[in-house]
Length: 89
Image (cartoon, rainbow, N blue to C red; front, side, top):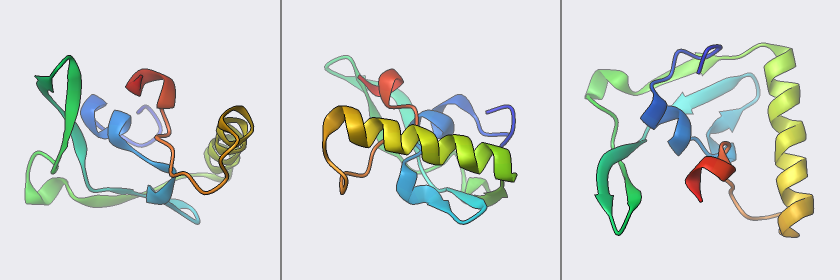
């Protein structure tokens, strides 16, 4: 959140498919409205909240390392993980 300026709900909703080269697409959020104790994926706060955020090489490298870690743990290379997977459990 610090490096991208995302809101908490936007950060938690980010998936690795939202990462393109040196950009992250902010296009959804986990809403505070809960169903059975879990958040609901919803559109962003407003149409102006849809945006592309540029990230530096270090953050991109760290995110790709995290993705590889998830793939090793869950043994599924093709699954589109949430970047903050542990927070979504």
